[in-house]
Image 1 (cartoon, helix red, strand yellow):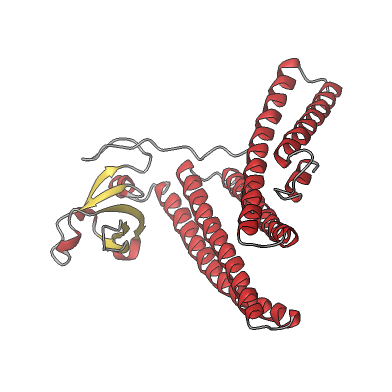
Image 2 (cartoon, rainbow, N blue to C red):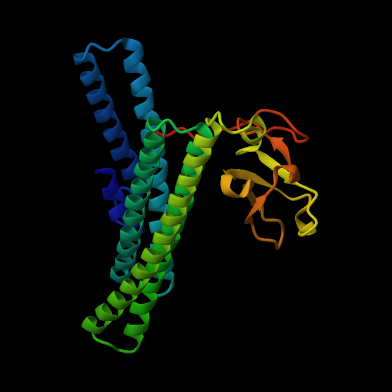
Length: 311
């Protein structure tokens, strides 16, 4: 976009309009063009004034968020330029560092756009499949964890690439050797992420199958009301003699294991104690919060949050 021209120019180059002023001016020009197009399109479709006004307000809100991000990116690039000059680099070398920063930012923007699209897809597919609000929320949280892990892996890869390039350059290696070193690091980082991503996706697949089975059991009239009351409920453990350390701990009764006549309970982690899944009898479980989120048992029910709105 025209607004990105201000970012590509770096900072501190002196003379003329400042990058921040150019960004604001070009951003306003883009906004007005977008508003005119939306209004013209909606008027041609016979939309009401209220509908047009609502859509124009949405465009202004989205553009304001976009401009906040652009200003932050520009400020980061200007800081990179100033730091490079302070280190004694020439203006040309400082601008080269700014361009590297710009590429980093643009790649991160693409990653964020990919993540937002994935969140929307997860949300829409879950709704279309008719899964519960609680399961939609769980899937979105799992998606966020996956995305956070991917962003961290990407940042780690970028740092490793920069370090490999710097070390190769310090050794006086040729440009071809520097490129070879960077590619080797990139392959290693990509392989590490692929392995971790596969593990996370496999775990999510298991979680979805367990959730689907629990939902089926909740609707199974052949199971006793007591079993269905405990199923997917938040529970407190008590009365265990073999594992007294678990008494008083809390968790979720994820599934009724028919062949064992026990619940598969995911026990919360506590301090240094990691979360663990155990098979426990109904007699050793006190319901704190039923699956539907209502009150019950000896615990106060927490309101179930709706999945966060997606644009």
